[in-house]
Image (cartoon, rainbow, N blue to C red; front, side, top):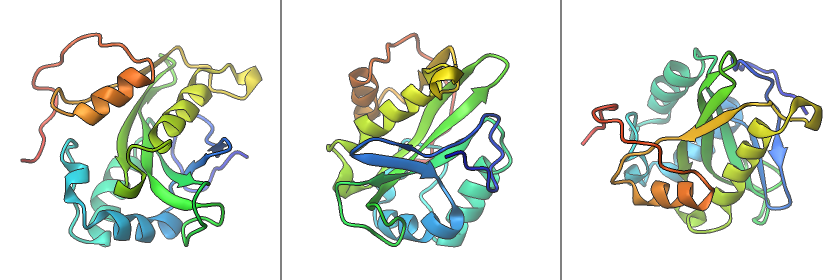
Length: 188
């Protein structure tokens, strides 16, 4: 199913799913409240990202969704639904497990990056991250005739001290290409 709602992404966006998880475009009206409620007690989730943590749901909506995602055609945020858990207010098929995005996407260069990965604590070290990254890789790299975007490159960037992200990238087949010094400012 292609989803067009208030998205500004440079490629078609659709729900992605397998037997264990579903990734659906993040909708403020559906996902913001449950995500903020589940993540606000864990400011450490934002330790390796420039934005956040957020004091209020309004701040999350304004500073993260409206400022970073909505205006940028190279970005789209997905809500990750764990279909192995009971349904929730965010989705009738399962529990909201976190968020993940395509970012720095270029239709001219046929490339994207997987980023803004926030997996809620109860879902860390489970099947959620691997399945979500796998679905994003599959959708990005499969040809349009197979239902994908036909991209040539998917990249992953993370800070050198972000061990969980480094492990996840390696587990999913990403290889280290280099070090970008002074690339981002992180809150501290």
